[in-house]
Image (tube, rainbow, N blue to C red; front, side, top):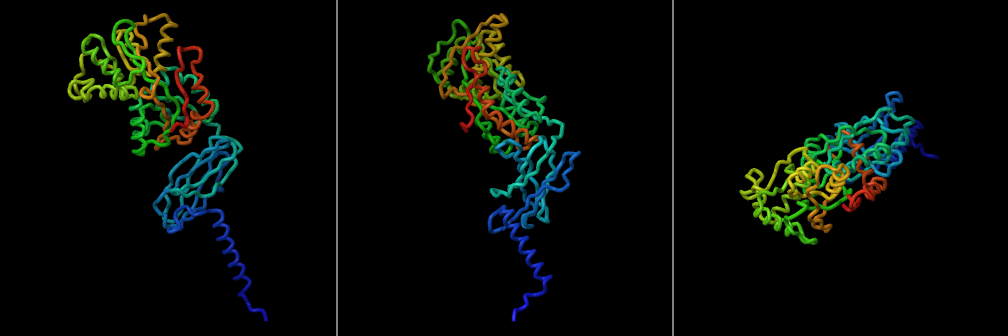
Length: 408
């Protein structure tokens, strides 16, 4: 006689429950260690609104994850990279959600990250974009503007990513860009050229995804006639030692400093310190001390390399410049026929000790993290790297920038 396995209703319920558990285990792998057994589902809300063009990404995790966070990530149509959109706090019921307005039409994919673990992807096709654009705020070293490169790069980026506008660029020294843009959270993405300062901001959790974009070289600009005699292969330490000795004997000739905590200013001060800890000040090198008579610290916030080169030229003095801005400025003066050119490149040594690296960094508290990630990926991609390589070819007396995406 066949033994009874229970009522038909009970058997159907049991089978359905087992099937649900099986499907859940296939679709949603663990988001944390086996010890905690966190599991998550990630799904697109059925409340997607065609007219409002809004959707909600939501998920659940074991209640033990209460108060912790998942990171919601997005992959847009035609993109090979994932964008971190937002960190969402898990409720006491193990749930989280995120509202998102798509910026482009096409197939969108979402996933959730908990530590090093990921949920499976969930996809949704958007037939029409929102019809509105979002502002992307760039804070950048002024040399990108003063060397003319931004005039070439900006229209290329906006043509490739029409979902963004860029009307609020800020051209500051790198130190100010990192402080105001990253620490104070006023920027979405930053172009900088002060390696240690950049690393400090990443370590401080103010910026992330520091990546190489391009490089050029620092150089010394000085009077057309007279002055210091440099050797072609001199290092910054020996060159600035020779310059300091000459300026001490000729204090009426000025050295013009950016004095704005820019990447160039940080490099300049490090070069002076390699000569003597007291340089360029009298009291051991602190910026509050009175400078030597030949040291002109009248630069300051927002002045930029172009203005410092103009002041150096007017007084037939000395300054440290990146090569791109110098070549651009010199060409501008020669084309205009004014002002009279009283300075020239007195030391250009394209060696490792004079390298000037430019990086892109995404701001942790960016208001437009999607745009920041897109800009970072684009400026390191083939189109932008070729634009950087060919910028000024046949126009200036040398290459202005050298693309080096992937160097770090």
